[in-house]
Structures are given as C-alpha cells and as structure tokens.
Length: 284
Image (cartoon, rainbow, N blue to C red):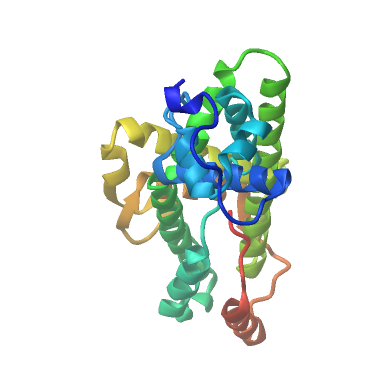
C-alpha cells in the first residue's frame, strides 16, 4: 500500500457536504471509469486511492470514514466491476445489418439468395463483434476480473464476485439469444428440431467462440488479421472470411434452418424491408 493511501491528509473537499451514500457512489463510479480506461490487471495494486478521490471529487475524510483501509475499498470495487462484467456491443451492429441488406435488397427474392444474404450478415457481423471485443479495455478488464476472482481466497467476497459475474453473464446470454431470435425470425429461419437446443444454447456457443478467439488473439495477433478467400458451408461464391466469421457461421448453420412455414411473397419481402428500417436489435 502506498504511503499516501494510509489515511486522510490535507484539506477536506470544499463545498457542500456529500452524504456517505453519495460519496460511495462517486468513488466506485470514478474507480470503474479509471479501470475501464486502462484495463484491469490481475491485481488491483495499480489503483491509487488518491487519484480516485480526486476524480470522484469527494471529501477524503468521508472516503476514509467509509473505507478505513484501501483493501476494503478494493473489495467493493471488485464487486462493482463484477456487476457489469460483460460489456455490450454498441448499436453499430444494427446499422451494419441495415447497410448489408440495403446493398443487396434483391437477395431477398429467392431461397438461394436469402441464404447468401444471411451468410453475408454472418460474415460482417461476426468480424464487427470480434474487433469490438478485441479492442475493448472493458473486455480486458472482464478477462482479468475472472482471473482476480479465481485468486481470491474462499469466502464471502469470492462468493459475491462469482455470483455477480454469473448474473451478468446470464443477462448477456439472454440479450444475445433475443437478438438472434429476432434475426432468425426476420429472415425466415428457425432452430433445427433435431439440435435439441434453444437460442440461449446458440448464444452461449457463439459467445464462447468469439471470446476464445479474442483470448488467443491477445497473445497471437495473427489470428485477428487472418483472412481467407473462401466459400464456407457450400457457398457458391468466394469472399474474404475472417476466423471469427467462419466459426460463427459454422455454429449458426448447424443450429438454424429455413422455416418451411414462412411464405416469401412480395408482401413479406416488403415487410422485412420496412422492419429493418425501424428495428433496434438488443445489444449482445
């Protein structure tokens, strides 16, 4: 622990006195923002309590009244980080989906072209998700947070962190499942009955694939830049495919099939185009 983290020194924060609850909220908010800017190491020793106090703009005396020791603050910080342990992907996905469909509107007209359109969406969306996660300090924090959790001694803190991470993960899988359910319904696909799976199953496997490739790419950057001229899964044309796109497309194709109950007439094609204009997909 640094000397200047031992206890209050200097003048207290000037201005109106904040409640202990507001001080706590500001301190945790400032510390989370600090970690999200730089990423989390396996330990939290790089977090300076004095810097957090300054960024939070709170009274030092109030902080040390709430957390007499730095370790007590770090324990609460780990729990706060775990509440939102799996950052979301921004709305760029929805915009990309609309752009791809608008560029290939005629691909809605036949079963073969619709399948090609869906594969084109897999190709672009998978790469976008991968690159977003790969370049995210918040995702590096998530990876380090899991390692930090594993290094915690058995006890109440570890149980609380594990529980918070589990809840965050469940919510994220639910968001991904809902997004893929919408996407499948929009383009006339359904889950294969023989797969015995739900969209939550699909979401878990898709998430694990992206996350696994990100972890590998952190130590082997060539994975992120790898491209292959390919026509995977029986595609008639050859395009540039990334490893994430090949993985995601392979999994999705194993679980999804065209829904024979969906009739693709002119009215449905028009409704799909109209729906894309107002669709706000859940952020996976």
